[in-house]
Length: 136
Image (cartoon, rainbow, N blue to C red; front, top):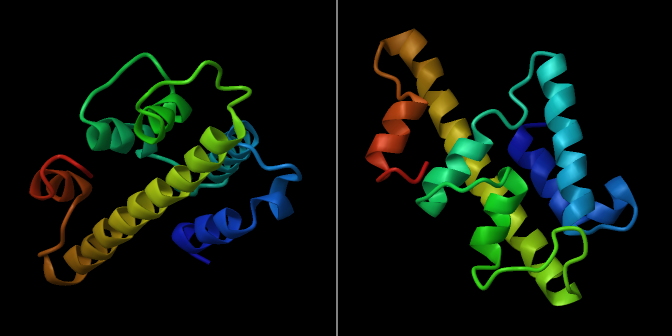
């Protein structure tokens, strides 16, 4: 199962993976996923934070969950730990939409790198970022 397929599975039924699903618990789950992947040689969420900054078009002092909230809730939020139910639901939906975009771009870049090994004409993540207007 690819990361993209896994994220879609978790996004479809997050409560199955972490009990009561909230933006906070899902980001904690994804951080654990990232740490496990890194420990076992996988990509995990490598490049995710940088991708979000490029997608948003600016940086701030927030870690990636805050970057997602800036995109999902441009009007702001009071506390990351206890979002109002409508904001929480919307932030979760946006999180998984962004994860899907990120994973799709990474898969395309990885496929290009595999082609590079065969043909010498693959695409790198840097090339993908440059050709997509800095939104990779």
